Image 1 (cartoon, rainbow over the protein chains, first blue to last red):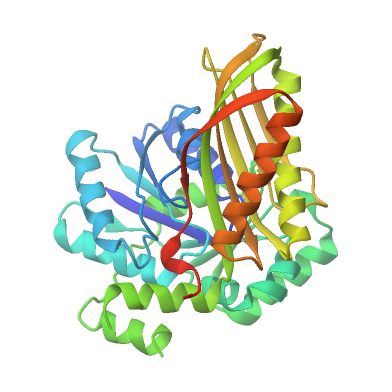
Image 2: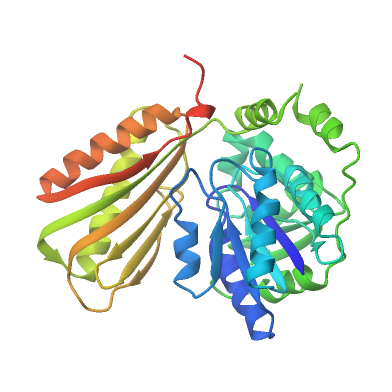
Length: 221
Length: 150
């Protein structure tokens, strides 16, 4: 079973894109479950997923990447016991950071080492709004890109080629080695590629032995 | 450093976003078809967002909603910028709505959570009164733990 997490600022199109990825995985005969982690205790994303017939559970009370990391393990275990999917897609809040997500998933993998693997983390970058976001929430957006295993530049059908080049340069400047995918839920671009990455991409192994120290050094000072 | 402290430091340092969500039940005297229901939701979301900007917000994080009418018809709306048309998925089946439940999330940059909450609830009150729509707030939520200390 794979746990595949995405990150990306609010409104970057994660829910809409993941619905299409889930449909693609279903069409390949794979069983998919999703976990959404929305603001507070009132969840919109879960409802959006469920109207498409996608089995969805929610985690509330904080952000998976830090505050409720332990809850992810419990939720994944419950899904495995009741449904045994091939892939669990996890959509955290738009302020989640990849390092925290990797740590949360690693804790879960540690509890189920023979059953569960962590897929590469895909950060969604909103090609339409990136400039505004870099002006207002630069640190968060940069962190999401720098710590990503792959970056999906999303909504590419809605921007000019010039803007697309500029966003590409920005992403490569921050994370030169990152795998870059261009996507649009509207046109279907990138959906098969992200689905492939989630089920066949090299599993992420995250060392938990000094995870807290590394996290504190980076964010706690 | 414990988990709670780490979470606060991480998110306060990075986002400065005000967040609020509400779940309301609607009692509509003049039944709304799918088109008018969609307009109602869009007007409410635009109105709340503009009022947040009038009170100091400088960017939308994400304003989104999900309406469920009696019988199961749904409308979901996502707004990320006042200059970008909202994304709407209208799944009304031709019936008219007299009862419904609406979830609204308002996340904006530049206002703290209690201000977003106050702005959203005040605007909703006036908006519903203008349209003679009775409503009750089933639940509302804002992340008290992330606001600035008093």
